[in-house]
Length: 75
Image 1 (cartoon, rainbow, N blue to C red):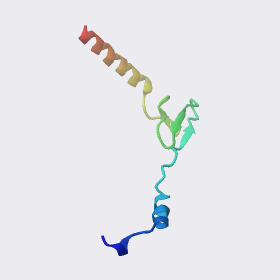
Image 2 (image 1 turned 90 degrees about the vertical axis):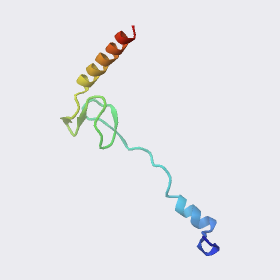
Image 3 (image 1 turned 135 degrees about the vertical axis):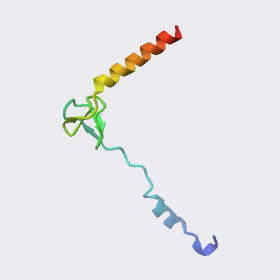
Image 4 (image 1 turned 180 degrees about the horizontal axis):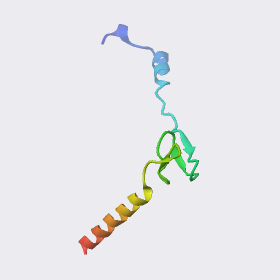
């Protein structure tokens, strides 16, 4: 890189002005009124666009069963 390819301070600043991180788009789930990210499945009820995508209760039960087995194994 030689001198002729350099940018001055204002050009550098104008380029970097577009590198800012934007805030995440947060909306409210219409079914359970929990906060969720836009275009993502609700982590509280497991619904997206009015349809059940994830069975949240089954996931919680599986996690509890795994934790219980882990506790019994350590005893």
